[in-house]
Image 1 (cartoon, rainbow, N blue to C red):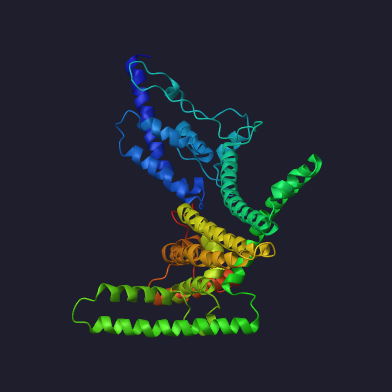
Image 2 (image 1 turned 45 degrees about the vertical axis):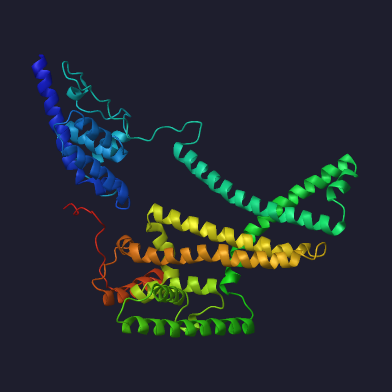
Length: 455
């Protein structure tokens, strides 16, 4: 065969590969799966970018790289390149019947046509490597790359958490050491030196164990303390008294808000910056307390989180508590990371509050330990806890504002057409998630990017 003939065969093979790329784009939903939407879009985008420049020297290599990235995609493409026709699909499963026979048969890899595997003289582009066998590779002795990355991420998160816990525990025990030294008039180090070497080792081991166990105990107590700070589990009389104070505070904020708004609306000149700032602060504070008295909780933390939980229902008919696990699974990775970091900051502030309040145990040795504990706990509550709590509430509400349509799409629920319809649709969707339904309406929508069923 002459060089001209070989070049012609190579060009013909390139055209077949381009034709395969155009044909496989329509089969991506079936090959990749209806749930892997992001992966499917990525592959389709890469194929579209390669097909947009068919004359580039690396176009075919870019297409082959996409075809080799997924086993099912590789099987389909290999069949197309060998026969020139897309494979037929079996009745059950998503793989072509011919491809399944090859995968379970002789075990030889499905290669490109032979003409494509030849090195063509005189062309600057080198021949690509053959497509690998789509069957999974045998296990090796070490863990996979994905597992390594997962373990690294877990180790990193644990290291950050324990760094915070260790720092707080160190401050607590250092303050306790100072309190005991103050009260006893003699340093515990001097007493430790007077002990026998074996006894000193036991005391040091006990101190280290107390340091570690106290950190573990505080981490375990953090969720329960946060729940108590929200106002749950309070005695009946104390809860009613605190809730009444929160309602009176809301009434004062409401009156001030209406007065500032009326002054702003009636003003003939631009509103003064102080008045405008007062209106903004009052409006923000008013949003942190639920409007209905029966929905209010006895603390600022509880009302802030409760108000954020109620607004998705008021705006969209979606119960934030019932729908949250389902919405969490369809949130983008960036949104989930931001929420997780904010919740970690809130937990860290709660644990700092526990350590601050616990400093009161050193009062028998030093009388100043009790006021220090009170001041430190108040400072943590006002300065370190309220910020993450408000941020978490805002992120919760924003998750429903921006990503609720992803929940509708994942459940194949028809998207609302207007705000009034959305409230009713959200209520139906909440009931469907909570208890299920056997009603004939609404009619489910097809999955996104789903091809028509073959006849």
